[in-house]
Image (cartoon, rainbow, N blue to C red):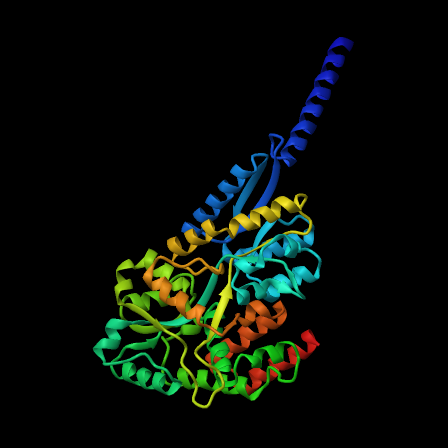
Length: 423
């Protein structure tokens, strides 16, 4: 009996050692390799491009394994926030720069890569969105811009030309309504599509300095008359039946708004250039009817059409807590290499934030030229402002569209919260 007990104890001891050995090797990849965990949000072709970049990185670093995890966009921000606060963030992760990234920078959770990257490779205005107090905390791969896409066939049918001014745009809206065509498709349940209108109108009225002044508390505020006027323009458009019925309840990601364009029920949509990628995957035959124009000017306004609404994303950042900061930084570089960027723009119809990567595709290159000629890139407010103020911005703008709040009330709420959060 004693012999049996001794054998059992020895067996348990061996199993214990084996288990410990497995745990130890698992933290190093299960085969002695170092492990980097990489989180992103993009499905489809973009995900394939990231995986190819990871494969190139692993080939250059055979002692490293990269665990890639894609998290759906809607769940991503919360999951990363929980991981950050819980002390177990991924080594490399997706962000959009701006205020959303800065909250983690301020908490000391993002790696400063200033001394390890060549900033001159990037569009300066794009890199600025992940640079805080002179230090770089993220490398942008994608650079998006919002333009007004339109159906050339409908415009030709009714003798319409691309508008240069807001008044010309209103005339087009009247003509389309008279012919029972929805002028502009809007899917605003998620609030950010409508927020582009407030941002663009405010920039056209008062110039890009308005937001910078309100954000940095340098004189003007979010209750400035230009923000009130921007809200009045939005409500004028709503009252002229510019948008599809029930637009504030239509989700963007499901594609209902885009279908209005594909089917010819609507003529225009002000949206990011990701729309082009949607067209190519959902209704490729529609592309031959597609064209775009830049958001029109406002008579007497200080803004120019070279002031473009834009967004960076993905922006790749590394965790301050990574056990392998040098390797994490090398992965950031591979994810923003020229090869990755060229694949990204050519295979997804997207723009890239790298300076010298020109799209092969003619349509994408036309949008690229607009960005190259831009004198200011205005990043979305909800990606630049601290999260609490960003959410209020989207909520109040959606309420303006719904005619549930006056522009004056919305502007006052924004300024009150800005004084609380920013000062």
